[in-house]
Image (tube, rainbow, N blue to C red; front, top):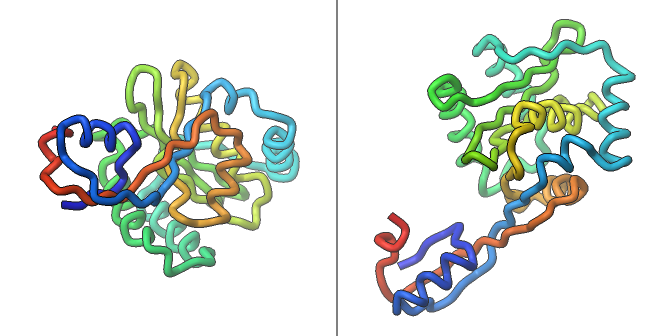
Length: 204
């Protein structure tokens, strides 16, 4: 049997149960940060936020028209350089699932307009009492500093938490570098594993 996105802790749990792990292959790295560190960014990160704030007349909104979100998403998709990323379909499916369930899962939303035009948005959701997860961030690449600005604004919505996951790098070198620059407090490695027995019951 095989499984993906298995952590080191999960692998040890499998072994402790007496199930042999035939092989394990590192796949993805999850980037985890201190909420307070993101709220009070380092000089380089802070400068990028200020660059956007100083160069553009912007408006922040916390709700937005669904059709306009879709229109912007299509624009964002057209800006992507790596159209063959193996995670593209999964990411696309997850985006539409979130879009259709924003209220159901109490997803916090930040939308930024420049000249009454949507130029970026970010969504986040509380995972537990002390952790939140950034689930989508999309920005028009021509607006310098916007990505960092969005990240800072959504973090304010979860100021009462301790840590945040900004997800994985999806095997995209540019995205991985972007996340490393934010100063993660932990880089959690995940694996694709094969075992000699069924493991699903261990994680139910």
